[in-house]
Every structure is written in C-alpha cells, then in structure tokens.
Amino acid sequence: MRRYPRLVGLLWRWHRRAGVLAAVFVVMLAMSGIVLNHSTALQLDRRFVDWPWLAQSYGDPSSNLPAIQLGEQWLFRASDGRVYLDALDVAPCAGELVGAVATDGLLVAACAQELLLITRRGELVESATASTGLPTPLQGIGLLDNHVALQTQGNWRLADLERMEFAARAPAGGAVIRQLVAGQLPAAIRDRIPAPQQWLSWERLLLDLHSGRVFGPLGVLWVDFVGVLVASLAISGTVMWWLHRRRRQ
Image (cartoon, rainbow, N blue to C red; front, side, top):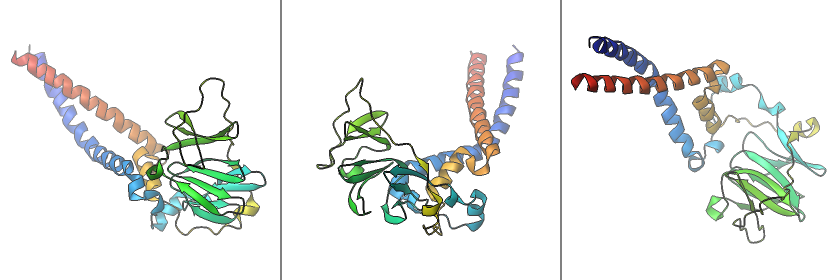
C-alpha cells in the first residue's frame, strides 16, 4: 500500500509545477476568448492598434488584398474594414468579406456580420445586420437560379433583398449554388487606394494572440503544448483524487 503515497507525492509535485507554468497562459487564453466572444459589440474589427513596432512585425498587408471580380469591376474589403468597388470607397462592413455576387443590377457584398447592397456606380443602397434579421455569422454567398443564397452555420438560406427577409431555406438535394472565388486585386487598382494609417485591428491581434500566431509558428506550437499540459493537469488531478479516496477507504 506504500506505493500509493509515493505515487500521489510524485503526481502532486508534477501537478503543482505544471499548474504554475500553465496558469498564466490559461488566464490569457480565457480572457482573450471572452473578449473575442463580444467582438462585434465592442467593434474590435474597427478599432486599431497604434503600436508601430507591432505593425512592422506583421509586415505590409497592402500587397495582399483578396478581391472578387464582378464583371469588369473588383470588390474587396480593405484592412481598415471598408469595402471598395475598384478604387471607390463605398462603406464600412462588419467582419471579414466572405463573398460577393451581382444580381438585378446590384452588387451584394457579404461580410461575416453585415450585408451590403451596392450599385454599379459604388453607391450604398442598403445594409443588413443581425439587428435587422440577417442570420450571422455569414460564411458565404452565391446564386441559386438568380436568387441570392447566404450560407450560415453550414446551411444555405434564400435572401429576399426587396423585403430584406432571410428565413427561406434553400432546397436540399440537387441544388447548384454558384459562388465566385476570390482572386488577387490588380496592381493598377491597388496603387490607387490610399494605404490606411491603421490596419491592425484589435480583433485580429486578439485572434492571433489566442491561437499563438502572433509569435509565429513557434507560438502556435506553444499554445498546442499548453493545451496538452492543461489536459495532463486534469488527468493527474483526477488520478490524485481517486488514489486519495482509495487510500482513505
């Protein structure tokens, strides 16, 4: 029976030291996760980090702007959160751009938390958010027999843009939804867009901090290690409880 106290002592020393090591990072992950859960309400995608040294470590994002070609025009969301039609500033859009389509003389830009209806001349006609019934977060947008379809939570819904209703589900089985794939914004258009002084949003920084990407590949591996460490603490704690209970019995 003496092996149980020795095993408990060994597990306790491991549990204590590993717990101290993991505590700081667990608190950081928990706090960043809580804040990110309220990212839209706090408008973190529109608030920017004014730390030049940190922005420099990310590099210059202006050379990599994914865009969607709609006929002869290009639509994209810049790093400052604003949607552009070619080099024309249209409006801010909440969340990352997940797609765009052209229908009935209008361009429809779908961001994760907002839908924009835009004319071919770059005029904003209307926008829809969760407060107006838009199902969020949006994951994609496409066309089903010339009807706009929105993807959210893995399901497709048909959008009635005249009434701004999004309740109808797309028919299951055999339905073909056409989506446009994002391409690279032409350099001739990119050069006409003024580079934003602030582009590193708090949302992106917290996401990178939460995943460890802010520290590069090693940071991601470290977050993975912390996850394994926390799982080991849970296992060792359970084993110590079981051994202590058995010893008392």
